[in-house]
Amino acid sequence: MIEQTALVVTEWKYYGPDDFPDDAAISENTLLDVMKKRAPTKKGIACRFSTYFSLNNKDILTYVADNSYVIDLDDVIDKKELLSMIRNTYNEFKERFDLRKLGTVLQDITLKPLEENKIHFESILPMLV
Image (tube, rainbow, N blue to C red; front, side):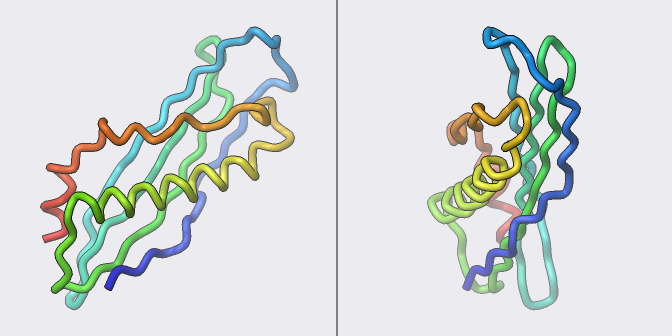
């Protein structure tokens, strides 16, 4: 059995200007960190997404949130199941961003889609053995 914990926003630092030109180029960089978790009767991972927005090399927003997946020791997790867990975390991460961005200069910005081809499943799956 797999249990997902609630997504927790661990950092939301908004440095943004009050306004900026319509033609301003905002850069976004999103990172995924996965950490192994282990208990005597369970195994699991913690997934953390971090997104950084900047304008002209000046930070606008740092947003970090994570959650965990607790898994029975006997359960075998394959790439498909792992991808589903990461997608779930990202979707919650995105939903939380969409609510919190209101009232900032990023209110018309959406997070880029999850780049699944950049996830290194080969390094994550051994954490779940």
